[in-house]
Image 1 (cartoon, rainbow, N blue to C red):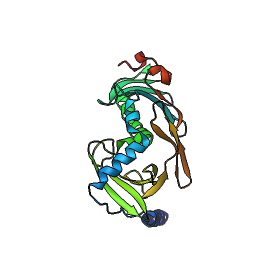
Image 2 (cartoon, rainbow, N blue to C red; image 1 turned 45 degrees about the vertical axis):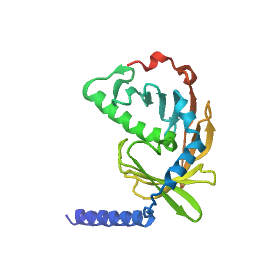
Image 3 (cartoon, rainbow, N blue to C red; image 1 turned 135 degrees about the horizontal axis):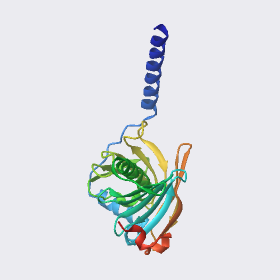
Image 4 (tube, rainbow, N blue to C red; image 1 turned 45 degrees about the horizontal axis):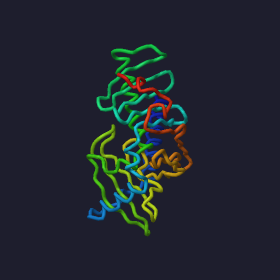
Length: 244
């Protein structure tokens, strides 16, 4: 009994220590300013990454999360093929439902529901790292200006959408309003205000810009196998591959 007691005390102290470290490392969410300038800065950021060109793309593919998650996105129909491990999901992203295979065997019932839920969660995260700059004016967003040490920041709060409403992202822009990095106050991360870079931008057909590399401290994340175009063949697929 004494051993169990000491183990419990140790675990409690460890939890207190970890919690204290998270608080020390975390940063307070800066107070934003609401003004007409917000829309001007937002539009200049979207112009810098060429949002009209992004909107014109009909198909895009990429790989994320250490090369383990593979995506093929039909933006016209808002359907995606999501692959990881021995799982393959063809999902209607508007309905969050679709066709599910595991080891090439069609899944139904509870097994299907679990994989749909998993696919939706990784899609919401990984697609955001792909196209977050283009989503700063999505429905349910609130935008404010933050200015620190001569830098312009665009603070975006997501009140809806995805799987973690209430998350806040603070974009830091260069003198041409191009995104250089962001800070995150999100539920999934214990440290608040952590900064990640947005770099190694690639130009897609038509001119849309996509960042393929992010660094959060010593953690590096990259998008690979990025391709886009106006036909399914441009990402190595056929139109029938997206049939539900």
